[in-house]
Length: 503
Image 1: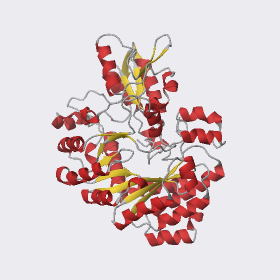
Image 2: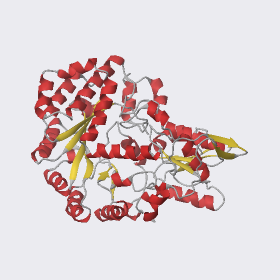
Image 3: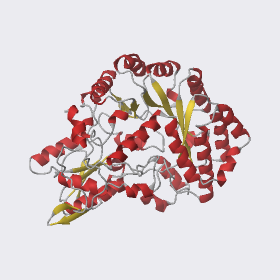
Image 4: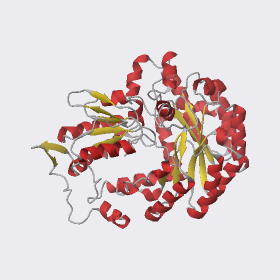
């Protein structure tokens, strides 16, 4: 909590409510045969720390997978606390690994996995074929997470893998490039509408969730798929939902269909309003005219949407930011502007561009590969102090537009009121705006409800997340701090009672 690399990064509260020791105790108590972490660039330092803590107590293999492990396997496998790295899709590779462990010996020849032997030798196996038909895969087992994640607040779903676009700042592009020569590669592999609706239907009965958040890079590049989904979804599920979009995928028929099916927001990555930056640096080939046409469709049909924008990009200047502020000020159905600070990710083409042009010192590459730069939701990557101050000023102005009627947006842009923001304490004011989103956004409200749910369980003596416990080692066994509450309640823990109806 309060260190989730999202809106609420508050170090003091994070330390007060830290669950690291408690987590380690739960892991030790479960007597695991394997510890598996799925990591992104901004979470893998946390995972490395926890893996090292586990290794001090348990002699158990640790495997890392996820986007960062796939993009940077060489750096991950060299860490003392990591024994295995998954370099692609992990479903079949992990199953084969567990099968071999059940047989009594780890098979170090499994495709899609790298291994580090006790002697320090690295065994680099080849990538394995991608899953050609996603419909054959079982649905995600949400029961595993039900005790510690309030699924009822909203349901996360993914309908495809990959992305039709190749933006230079995005890790999805990095993954796509790595998979390009892999068997069954396609830029986008989609599940059928039948499969998606069946998953939602089953889990709606289980969890009675309030809305659905589709987390694909883009909801679907296929207009036909969207139209079929929108025709059936209101009858079979009938709950609000949110999707991700792209200016080149906004069409009149699909926009109207999404609106009528219950889509309360399309989150669109605009990212840059400068044609040169967008085309030559970000590898995005939509024109400003195509952007205007997409926004006109949404505005004309009353479709609610939000716009993401990246601040601090190479060659970005104030002329561009003033121009896009004028665009933002004219939009009536854009309920949120989401400005993000540039955060250079490992192995993406934008990082190499920034190094080649002296924007990022070459010595910073290792720090970026290790996830030691700020994340895009917070301070972003390092940049010159004066430039950063300017970008933070526009970040606050764009964020504040979410709370303004269109006439006030136009007025503030015309008189350049945003220049007054330079003298404000930008960090605390931005935090205030982030918290204020709870008043008006369904997704922000769900985020707040999740936090309240987790916070209350920090003070529930019968829940696994009760406060914090120290982790010690004696005689090769884990011993909780005896001054703290026992982890063996007489009655079943709350999380077990909550999960019981699902069994």
